[in-house]
Image (cartoon, rainbow, N blue to C red):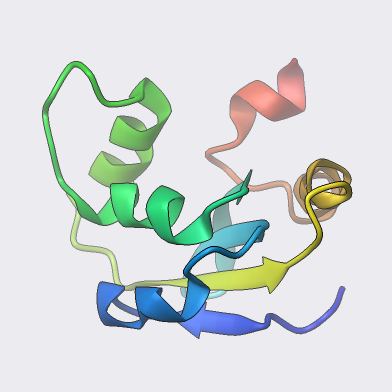
Amino acid sequence: MKRPNLVLHNKSSLAKVAGKTGVYAYYHKNECLYVGHSCNLKERISRFWRYSDSHQENQLVQYVTNYLIGRKFPFRVNIFFYPPETVKLEERAFIKKLKPRLNVRTLTG
């Protein structure tokens, strides 16, 4: 697996991913908890830092947010930039290899 293009430990680094497409992986210590992809990484990742009980928020975002931020886990986000045409394949490869705990729906479905 290639090295991440960027590693985030807090939301102050989000400006570095503006307008980029790729795969992100949330880690607690050395365990990968969640893998996702987005055509706008800054927008997608920033949702996880906006702690909200709004019913309009995506249920998955709420679950991951509650799990990571609600429990005050120290975590990091590894970001890998990929072109839009390959990002879904790369995400599947990451999930298959890392078997993240919070990607249960993807692994079973």
